[in-house]
Image (cartoon, rainbow, N blue to C red; front, side):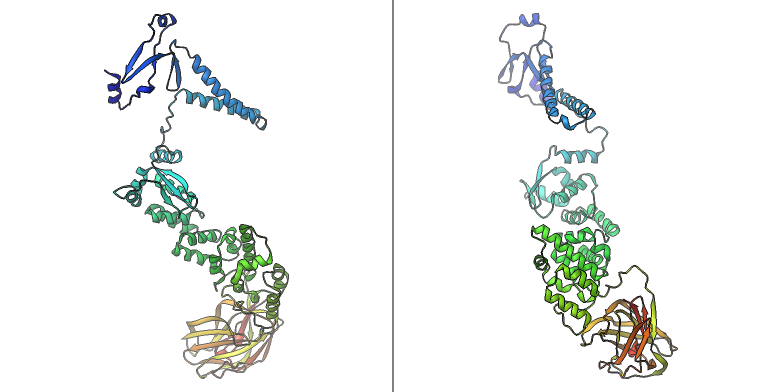
Length: 560
C-alpha cells in the first residue's frame, strides 16, 4: 500500500517537504549502495540522510547514537551551567536533587516520552488541567480594567451556561476576543474553575464577585453556593470587605444585609482590618446610622485609622488638613457630645480632626448644654451605649411618698430634672390602672432649649399591670445626660385613667448623686413635680429612668 494512503487511512498527514530518508546498514553495506538514491514522496524527491530525528531520538544510518548523545550532553551541560550560577545559595543535597531532576526531565523530553497525565484522573481533574495549561484553548477573554488575557475552551463553557451558548453559537456568535471589563481577573478565573470542576474557593474576598459573575452568566449552582456561604459565614470580621464588594458590583440586596451587620456590630466591626478599606460612600452610610452599637470613642478611632489609610492610598502626608479634607462633612456625623470630657481633651484634641474653634465649642457643649455645636450632630445614637460587655445593675430612686387613682387632662405629661453627675437615662416607671390595660406610649427627651435629643418610644403599644403596681418602661438604648444640664421627659399616653404619684420630692439623693425635679412648661396635662405619673428613676452603673404622665417619681439610671 502507498505510504500516503496508509497514513490517510490512519488519520495522519504526510508532510512531503519534511520527510527524511534514512538508509540503515553496516559500513560495508552502506558503501555498496549506489550514490544519489532518492525516494519519491508526492512531488518531492527525498535524498538519503546520515541521521534523522524520530520521537526525539536522533537515529543514524550506522545505528550509532553518537549524535544523540552529543545533543543530550550539550543540553544537560547548559542546565548544569545555569545551576552553577546559583550554587553558592544551595546546600549539597538540594544541588544534587536539582541537577538530577533537570537532567532526567531533559532526557525524558529528548527521548520523545509521551506524558500520560490523564492516567488515574477523574473528568473534573482532567478538565482542570486543561484549564490551567490552556492546551487547545479556543477563546480569549480580556478581563478587568487592565484587560488581562484569560484562555478557555468554548465546548466547556457552552455546555455549562446558556449565556455562553448564546455568545458562541448562532449567527451573532463572538468570533474575536471577548472583553469583560466589569469582573476582576481573579474572580473570573475562580468562576471558570467552578465551570470546569464544580468547585470554587468561596470566601469573604470572592463571594460577592462570584455572586455577580454567576448571576451574569446564569450558573445557578455557584450562585446558591455563595448564598449558603453568606448565610453561615457573614460576620463582623468580614462584613466590611463584603460590603465594599457589594457596592462595587451593585449587589443591593446583599449590601443592605451587610450594612445591617456593620451597623449592629460592635467593637469587632470598627476594629476589623476591612473597616479602613471602606469607600467614602460606605463610610457615610455607616456614620449616618442612628443604631450603631459601638461606643462613639471606638467609632472616632476607627475614623482616624480610615483617614490614615486613605492618605497612604493617595500618597499624601497624614496631616490634620488632609484628614479633614478626606472626611469632609462626614465629621459632622461623629457624636462628639457623647464622648467623656477627658477623652475629648486627651484624644480628640491632639488628633486635630477638629479645628481649634470646633474643639472649643464641643468642649464647651460638654459642660454647658446651651452651647450650639451645629452642624455637628448632637443627638445620641440609639444603640451607642449597649456595647458594654459588663453586666449593669440598676437602682431605683423613689420620689413619691403616696399614690392614688385619678384622671389627668389629656395632653403631654412632662417633668424636668437634672443630676449633679453624668448619667445615662435608661428608662422610667409608669403606673397602670386598677386592672391590666393596654396603652399606646410615645416618649421623648428634650434638652434645656426644648430641642429634642431622643425619642425612645414612638406609638408603642404595651400592657401596664394594674393594682397600683409601677411598670418598668426601659428605653431601647440609654441616653447620656451631662451633669448640671436640665432635661425634660415627655410622655404621651393613650389609654384608661391610671394611678399617679403624690407628694413628689424636689430633690432626691441616691448613691451620692443628687437629682433635682421641676415642673416643665412643656406639660399640658397638669403634671407637676409634686404630682407624678412616673414613680421613680432606676439607677445603676450609669443610667436614669423617669415615668408616666410624667411622674418622674422613679428614675432608672446608670452612673457614669
